[in-house]
Structure formats: C-alpha cells, structure tokens
Length: 415
Image (cartoon, rainbow, N blue to C red; front, side, top):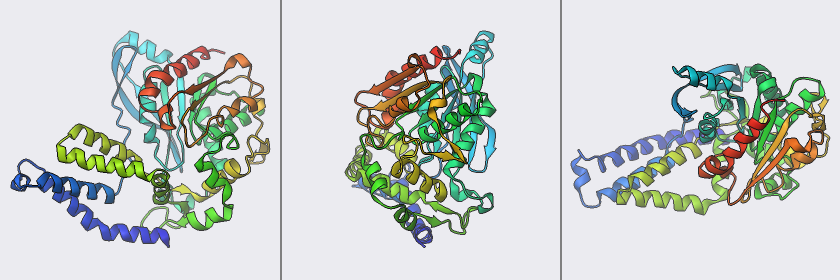
C-alpha cells in the first residue's frame, strides 16, 4: 500500500506544486508588474524552491548532439541497436563529411559502457559517454524503469542481468570490444565475461571496472553495513512493493525509486539541505549561473527508476550478504562463475580515494580473482581526492582518469 499512498500524495500535491511554479514565474518574469514589488525576488525564490522539492522528475535525455573527435566537432545520433524488455542497448553514432575524419572514426575501438541498475538512470553517465566519444565508438546499456515493463514480461533476476550483458557483447562483437562497468555492474560484468571464457567463447579485449563492489568484505562502507546487518526478509518486507495500476507494470513487485531516493538523501541530509539553501540564496541574489547548475544536478539526481524486486534481492544476497563471487561459490543459470578462466581480456580497476559507496580495495579485489590474466595486462588506478562520482564524471574524470583509460584501451586494442 505504500506505493499507492505515495501516488495519492503526489496527486494531492500536484495543484500546489504547479501553483508554486506559476507563482515563481509571476514574481520573477521581467514583464510582470508583480516582479517590481518589494520582496519579489525572495517570493519568487521561495516558490521555485517549493516547486522543485515537490515536482516529479522524469528521466532526463542524454542530449549529446555533438562531440569533439580527432580535432573536429562531429554530429552525434543516438540509436537503439538492440532492445530487451528491461534494457535498451544504445549507440552514439558519430558522423563526418571529411574522408580523413571518417577513416579515423572507423579505426576507433568500440566501447560498451555498462551503466548501473541501482536507482538512477543511465544518463548519470552522460559525462562519461561524452568524453569517451572523443576516441571511441560508444555503446551504453539504458535500463528501463521496471514500473514501465508489463508484468507479462516475467521477472528479472541478477542472472538475467548477466545474460543481457553477454547478449550485448555478442551483438557488438567481442573480438574488438572493450567493456567499461561503473559501480554495481562490475559484478555481473565480471560474471558474464568469466562464463564466456569458461565456455571457450571470444571475450572482450579489455574490461575497465570503476568503483564496484567486487568484494564488499574489504573496507565496508555505510551502504555495505546496512545490506549486511539486515536479513533478506527485512528488505523484502519493508522495501518491496507492487506497482500501482496507473503504470504498464501494474502488479510487478519492485524496489520503488522514491524509496531509493529517500535513501540517497538520508546518507547526507545536511549537504542536500545546504545545497537547497544555497540555491534559494542564488535566486535572491540573481546568480543565475549557479542556480542553473543546481537545477541541472538535481534534475539528474532526483530522477530515479524502480528496480525489479527479484534483481534487487538477488544483488543484496549475492553481493553484500553471501559474497558469492569472491568466495568462488556463485552459480549463474546453473554454471559456476570462475574468473580465473579469463586469460585473453586485459583488466583495469579504478577506485576513488574518498569513495563512500564502494570502499578502497573492493574493486581492486578483481585482480586476485582474475588469476589467469597476465600481470602485464593488469592495471590499477586510485584517484586521489575523488569520491564515488568523481571517478566517472566531472573534471577529475576528464583530466585525470580518462587519459589513463584511453591509453589502457589503446594498449590492448590488438591481441
């Protein structure tokens, strides 16, 4: 009933939310006589803050229209190249009229970015994708909000996630592919490639794992502690709810996005309170650049999706409670995951020094598991001063992390 109560509350609040939006414009638009009244900037700022706190946040667009590649600004077309019920495989296709640039673009190595299915949309990796487009053909997994997937499509488990990753690798072509996994998908990506190697299939030329929970027994964080201290039944009882009839996925059991969002905010409430207060002050002062920066960040941060219940509970049990991957006890669809079977795929792991989601050493643990990869084909990078998001987004990613990732991929572009 919690999900239904949430939807009812949203419906009841919507007139006040849109009234706040209208009021903010009335007291801020230059053409309005009300904007000339004493105190109008404070009223406008207060109303906009109320609107942004109460509004619904839809999935943002990637919005990548052009990219700088090989010294030229080239147009980008976003394409869906493969569709599954719970995920779309997107490609950001680069175009050029210059024959030399066309040749350079064709020679660039393909990269599959496996985005997290952990609350936020794949658009959280917009900066990751935009930067990679400089030197790569870029694909990304675009996970679908579970409330939009009809119940007739059946459940979605962690094993299915692994299967999706394998399907995407095969579709693009493993022989020339490089795979980058960010946070949560480091685990299913390692499983997917391990299983392909054990079967004798072609595997990607390299895999780059960024800030992921390969072994959460190492440097456990607050997130890890919560998952490890509560029984699985607690998560199922308190966090899993059926989708209301308003959505295509009516009746599907999910971990709702609004509960995940509440958890994100609870991890650091003072920081978010201060950010909203600063936004209000920026509006009052007329600092429109900083105010717009706040809007862009929270338009992304507040946009969340529902996760399939089966997948979420599988992840809690497999990754955070029983540590099946590092213990060598994980079976996917009846097959044992054996990372040491990987021999022809290079491995790079990246961690943020200040990461409070995946602690130091959790991602690096992949090196101990992938004993079949030669030492010269392994690389680890710890990014000084970076938190979780800093290793794949922002200035540190673009200036410090990306050059190492690019060079690592280039070094292993040929077997």
